[in-house]
Image (tube, rainbow, N blue to C red; front, top):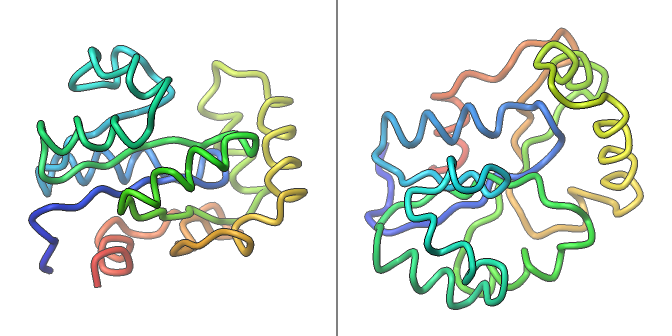
Length: 162
């Protein structure tokens, strides 16, 4: 598998479908810098970039490229932030949507614990109302089956970097 020397991908999608796990895989196995945009500062290799992220996505991508060749952004973005995603895409960031069986994802979310399941339900409702992923310009990865099985990391990698 050949992964471009310089690439930035944004993993998003249905909660609990394996985005963060795949981001950690890319960091561990392929040397990607992993920015978990929902876990500041712990999930940021360069936490000093947070202020730039909050104000200017174009400048954020420019700064990220100064630090890293390969980057995975991990963000189950709220539907209200679609304009931010479009700004990232305008800078060459590739959006990868993790999709899957909502019932299986809900069960995985509950098992994970820590956040009220109503947050999951509300986020999924908003995703569906927005028409995601079909209304997005992105690669859709069928990451979680109706049986609750996650797609193998190597298979996901093959889809993303074919």
